[in-house]
Image: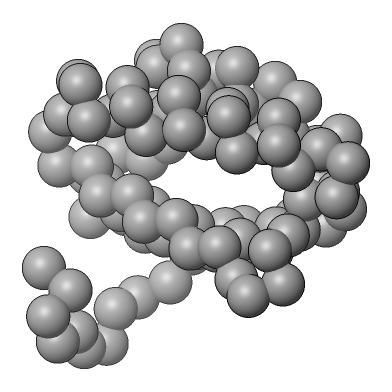
Amino acid sequence: METLLITYRVRPERLDEHLLLFAAVSEELARTRPTGLRYLSLRLDDGLSFVDVVMGPELPEPLPSLESFRRFRSGLEERCEQRDTTGFTVLGSYGMG
């Protein structure tokens, strides 16, 4: 299973737009339930920083096939002040499924 850790900070003036676009992705994922995909998004206490953890058998699939995800990604670079993506390995987990 492939894993990605994505960290980013959204520009304050673009936050409302970002949250609406992300909500659409969440709704489409809940509706389509892609096999093997795990997606966790955390909003940090500053309100503008986010950490996403994505796990799946063949990343980035199936995300690019989702219309809502394509809309989310289309302006992401402009909405963010900073962004970084890296792979990781889970060393241990308790209660995280």
